[in-house]
Each structure stands twice: as C-alpha cells, then as structure tokens.
Amino acid sequence: MRTPYARRIVQCMLLALLACSFGCASILLAGVSGGVAYTITNVAYKTVSFPVAATEVAMRNALRHMGIQETERRNVESGIEIDAAAADLTISISLERITPKTTKISVDARKSLVIKDKATATEIIEQTVAILQSGRFREGDQI
Image 1 (tube, rainbow, N blue to C red):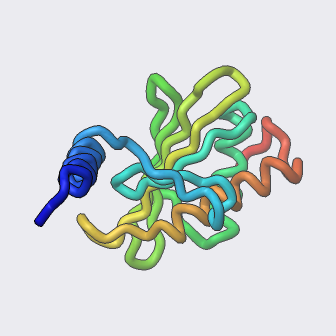
Image 2 (cartoon, rainbow, N blue to C red; image 1 turned 30 degrees about the vertical axis):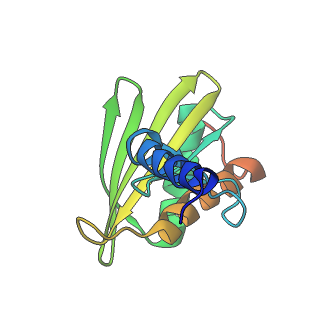
C-alpha cells in the first residue's frame, strides 16, 4: 500500500526525469577533466581568457604535438571552425569569440555517428590551455 508521501516522491522523480529529458542542455563533469565541461551530446567545451587568434595558434600547436592532422579551417561570423582527423576519429573544433579577450573552445571527436571520444576531445582542450598558459607562443606566430 502506497502512502501519500511515497506517491509524492515518485511523482517528483518522474517530473525531474521529464524535465531533464527536455530541458537539460549540459552536464558538467569538471572534477577529473580539469574544468572541461560536456554538452549532453558529449561535445567538450571550455572558455579561456585569451583572444581567438592566440587560442587558434595554441590549438594548432596542440594538434600538431598530438599528431592530429588539420584538414580544413573556416572563418565564421563568431570565430573559427577547424576540422581535423586522427586514426579513426573525425574532429570538429570551434573557437567562438565571446569578447575580444575571451574565447570558447568546443571539440567534438567522433568515431562514428553515435560513438564519441570524450577523452581525446578533453585532451585537445587541455593541451591548448597548457600552451596558452605557458606562453610558449606569440599571437603573431604562424604554424
């Protein structure tokens, strides 16, 4: 026999589940991954306090250091999009200008239409941030 209290808990749990299935845009998994967050579709992202140009140089250095081949680069209204490939991965990177001194990095590393590689996406961002913070580049540098 269910009590009114137990029924209320079940209703709240169902409502929370329904709300998350429709309204939750992202899930933060910051502890282990150094502050890198993930959207519900497992795209890694992080905002850094560096301009887009500096972030792009660091990103391209990180890709080269990791042995990832850049296949295409596009200027878009909000920043830069980079496509890359490594082994069985297709990697899409977006550098979005938030302010002149702030950039949002988004990395989507896919093995297939459904399978994603969060570890590689996270490592690309972490390597980029490490290069930015180390100052091992100059904004005008070319790759």
